[in-house]
Image (cartoon, rainbow, N blue to C red; front, side, top):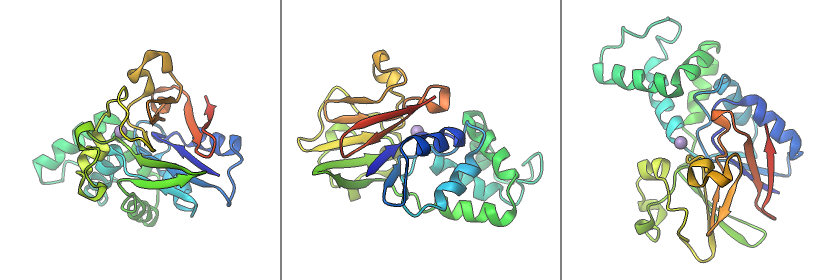
Length: 233
Ligand SMILES: [Mn+2]
């Protein structure tokens, strides 16, 4: 069976609980639609666990993108309490705003790793892809963290801007494709429609799966063969 979840944000316990709930096995596949890191306490543990599973496929989120770049800048300094010996003030500014946007939790989590483990996790972050197109039980799906601007929905995926794929907030009241379901994270479903607080949004050819696990709401997961929804608190 094929599962999707998103925006785990360092919530390793919720991830483990969800794998138990869906009885995830070697015969299943799981697509994680980005924002694995930041905010929650166990970004490194979560990344490590995912990296050990050949049937878990990571898709790039904006937080993963930022963390991958800035952790490389910090790597030699990460053992210190400060990173003020970094020279480029632009990079320092980026690090400061990332720290305020959940990045500090990721830095703390990486600090607990050995240098070799940190290196392996950074290599894993580089493997995250900007989108996937898959089929399950005859249904077609486009999986992406942010989305695609409605006016660019027919532009070939290879020509889409990565920054849009990871940051776009789609028009969830408009159907993008006749025969393809657009599966997205990034936009907590409560902000699409308050009626979907903590729930998967499945409407108009959209499957929005960020239920807000990074903000204390449940983690959601969908089985694509039959659209069955699963939740853990
Ligand atoms: Mn995001």
